[in-house]
Length: 181
Image (cartoon, rainbow, N blue to C red; front, side, top):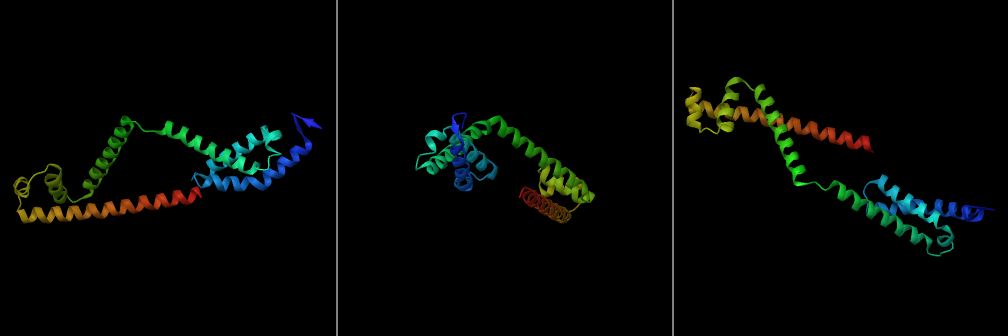
């Protein structure tokens, strides 16, 4: 019986070929494509093309090599299309920099507010207003030694807070990775 130009025997032959070769095609594409879903998509594309051309591909003694090559080419083509779509422009990079900078500033303001008043004043005057130790001491009405102490304690507290923030971010990334698996 002939259906869409393919005999039932050819269909059975194709199905057997698919069962024995599909996983190998995915493994081959996975060597160049890190995303397992995209590797599988490329293998599926190759087998769809093989099925469409089964009359000529099926009898070929190198049909497995043909399918593997088509799968790898499909993966490479998909990668090229994705790179063209994803290529960031200068405006994209600048927007990301601005967003990162704004996020950093929000974090600094939030953490500065958590510091005791004198530490907050000393850190803000010394590092945000860029005053010297003498100018900071004069503005706060304290000695230079007090400025050094308040700045040191404030920066140490900010450093601990940043370290905790980075640990939480790393933990979230690890849990996101675990969920993806």
